[in-house]
Length: 399
Length: 137
Image (cartoon, rainbow over all chains, first blue to last red):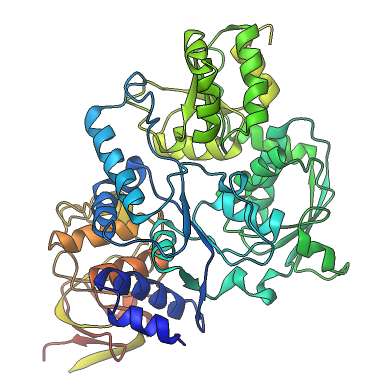
């Protein structure tokens, strides 16, 4: 692999052993994946932050690398705890301590502890910008909505990109790999944001990989695209989807008729996914409701909070938001008011990566295809996928 | 008398030891206990078997990228395999082996799973991408 003078120096240890190790990982990765060189990145988003996810092994590695500073702007994914309310949510003290050690390591490194899967709502990715992001839903969003350039990094590679400021130049960093491999015709009506998430999940499942070109995506608001990307990210290895009318680089693409694959998606297909991702717990058991995978935007949060304050809550509701949004709502005393109504505003965390058993959460209803998929497989509890409007009806009497 | 297999040396190093052949993809997160080096997953077929100090032969890795951290922790606890020989190396294994300093060879032909058996004495030269199965006369 070709390395610049600066990179050679880093690799040989001139900046210290840790930078050398971090760069060596990326160089070896790049060589294995056929990258001819590295490329500098302007932004790294580090995934694998929750103690539930990375455990003692990851914690040790974080603490070891906390002795270096990141060489590029860096943000990070949600933690395993709500740093504000962990104690009342049932999280154990030893878990809390370990999670805080991870966060302190990140801060020491210079990673901004944004604790969100929606970093693109905090800062705006630029078209053509080379970035190195973990978190599949965010990668899809940055690539597909902004035409930024990132591969789907893992926890370790996103961390080492933050530290070295570089990533292997392969995959979606290269023009040729950003051309469509399949055409998707969306032939359905969707009237709820969760339908869009299911649509993403479905397309991902059918195609598995490649770069879909999508026409007629029925909802293209930021909130809908957020869910779409999350659904697609968890059912496939797709990192870029070209959405007509949304993706900047899709404008340049002529209407080519020959694709490897063409699929048509209908309302029947969508309905089938709802059924498949649901464990049908609604009749008998105690359940909680979880909204905010990906994190709710401020406007989504307000909408839900207003309902929570107007109607009597029937079940415990978790609403996940990122820390700046949380701070703003807390300043209005809403966190307390909502807790009184059994609504938990989650700060900078996510139930997917939380210690659910400690939190006494034994079954869930959610409007997120991604949450339904992961919570069932990782936490082995029953989950039901329902439209957001239905979740609201379930949660609030008269809602 | 030896059988020679050739592959791509991804993480350099030399190793000589007893092979453990696992014929299924390994998810290091979940299948291997980083505190003991034991294989605890894979439906119990290898229960009690440790990867420690062995030449670990398997098709490829799967599962979470946290698997890289598990490999790293194994090496920190001095419980890591001596080397890994795989059909196809994916990021989880590459990152883990680089961090842990474990020699790694992939794209091995002929198929390592067909030509190496658990208990075989194996020499790995990941500088030159050579896997030598030493057969007693």
